[in-house]
Image (cartoon, rainbow over all chains, first blue to last red; front, side):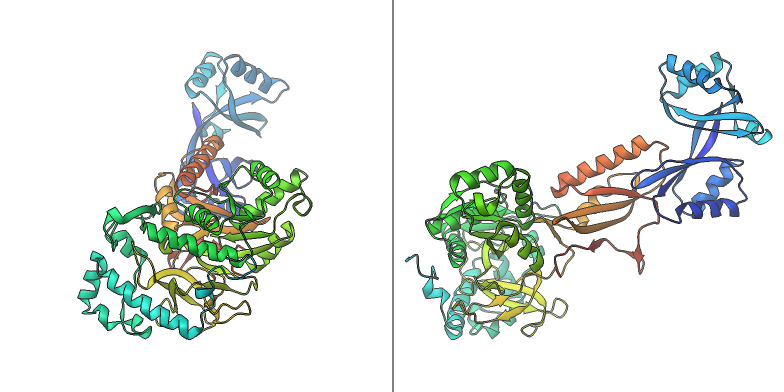
Length: 141
Length: 438
């Protein structure tokens, strides 16, 4: 039900991102979406890509601090209010969102997030028939 | 003693060089003889076939092996004592976080002599029985507390054992009691001044301060001048170490041109830390001290690991006791930060308890707004989480564990694996950017 995301520990220093991107380029990894937030000392660079396992191995081999994380990804019609409806469901179930980002693939909106309660989130997704997206599904879009 | 006399102990303070040398030989011979009551020194002398009678001059000092901090640890707790324990009245101990603690024993005579030495220092910089002396230094095992306490009492000043911390109360004491002299570590003096400014206290207008004694923490001449300008009084550099009793070993006179080390109490040697051969005057080397009137635990040729140099053996103040430069650093990796002695190994030991961390770390010491600070950067081993909250919690846990160990709160910074400098395959552990040794 989940998608695999690369979570990379990076220092707030020039050249850090470039190094990561070059390693992924060398490994022939296609980045589908990525996000990073700014903090004082360090950041977590989160990447959805076409081959998370290969990306993980390449980064790890280069000595990068990286982990694979299961995140939820839900496919939405690209119309106003879609994301709000999904969030409303989680809010009612008292599930809080740790982080979230979204992107478009061929006209489909993809909402990526992690929550405070993974099991409960799975239940909600099933119950509401949300269209969850795996890496295979992402690659076939 | 007449308040107008610049000397508390003129009979010792004004000795000529010849008289100092004669006294030292006499006291050295007595000390070495007394040391044979210590199982440690007895064995050590027997091992190299040296007899107390072989020590006939100051040059003979070099026949004796050095004593090190490791020796103190190896003989923990009482193996160095030269008197039975029932003659001892106090001990001071290090925290012992890098192995066995070091224990220094004192007889009543040792405590008396220590008080005399500190009283002599304070008198030298102008304290008299009319003065109010506030000791804003840690008490307990830290010798700067009781050492100055007993010394100032011996001198006859009214003493205020305020101890460190609670700056507002310190300032209130200074105002209400008319404090004229304060002893504190330099960074704390700066802190006190900040609190005074924040609370509308002008030290020149509202306080009666005239003398500061600062020490136990390396500081530069620039820092001293700044402190003097802040409070409008003279600040005198104090040198002490618990192995030698505590404060009172060396102190600046009113010339402020080097610290007089009391040569009726100690023999001073400056040696090359590598070859252990003496270095010429003016050249920086490691300070080695031999105690001359300690009873419970005399130490012969103790390697202090502090680096300094001889500035002279005479002084316009009238004292010919050797003048040494302010400490210029350490010949080992010990860090002295805000009066606290820290070895990198202590920090390493704590960091290694966190499985999320790799073994590579870097300690950076900086001076920010007159405060000396420590930043500990440590590499995370594997990326173990995707959660900022957990990274922050880890940072907090590390900070707390380090604080419990070194008694100071460092700034902890997590960094990615492989990002810290490595030189010659050996990790660089400490970078000192403080304005101290300039």
